[in-house]
View (tube, rainbow, N blue to C red):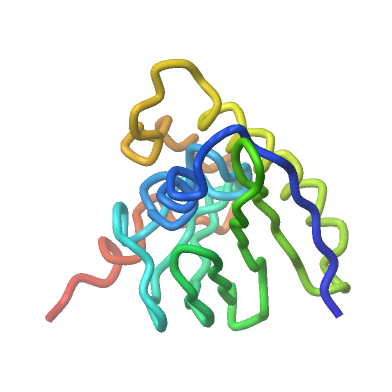
Length: 158
């Protein structure tokens, strides 16, 4: 069973999809993502990468569902995670996130993400919000298990 949270956004479904489906914009609207690899890619089914949390931990992700320009879902640490949905609505669109019931507390983070998305998409003169530069990632606090470099820097190709 999944639980969902959503909100109306005064923007086209195409603009909402462009924002949520491009990895480079995730740190801009996603409170639980401070950095992502690949850094600026369009989603594809089966895509794998890593997200860096605000605590500095790098976690692997896998795109397990994709129906452009409507929805995508992923797993994080090989566990089912958030599903993302964009639906047309009169005067804009509805953006929703759903999570597995055991992760119900994460809906509060999803609500914050939806608010960030609305602000980004409803801002005046916002031609292409998915092209905004993300804020620099905060350094990992001392004493964490986080590695200061990204996964690709730690494991360069042979």
